Length: 186
Image 1 (tube, rainbow, N blue to C red):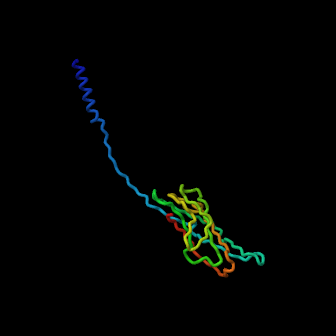
Image 2 (cartoon, rainbow, N blue to C red):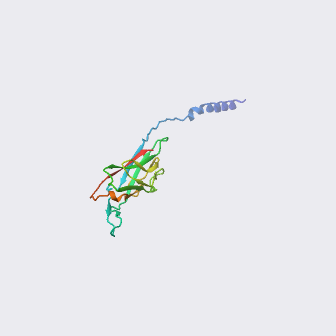
Image 3 (spheres, helix red, strand yellow):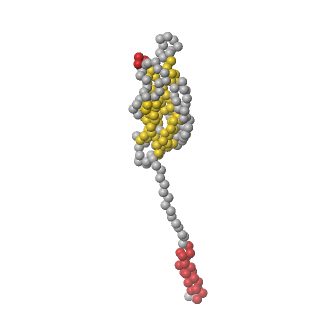
């Protein structure tokens, strides 16, 4: 082997052996941690949410009294929910929390289907529900979701007052009871 070829071969081998030293990369790592707490928040919109009904005499003598929703306002329920991966879905219960529905009167609430705004996994209305002092679900199947905040977001609430037993009705002015909504785990 000639001397020039030996020197070239030695240089090539030396460069090949030195290559790892020149082509090493330097890395650094950092761990990123975060947490998402369980979230269960419910709100009624708009804020001035008073519903008013009136029971009036029939237009004809001997006719059945007429129940009228005087307030005729649109009321919406908004909520946000974050559940554990293995957690149960949530529901919204409704109940009377203060005072009573007058005797002879039945009070109902129905939640509409979700407005379509917000995220997926919003709950499903259970239909028209009679409201008493016992909690009853009006929306079920709530997963990790949000409805958006404000009027026209979430589920519209429809209120119904019906005369269930006219013999028990007594004349009274401004009878008030309070309805409470609670988001809970199923």
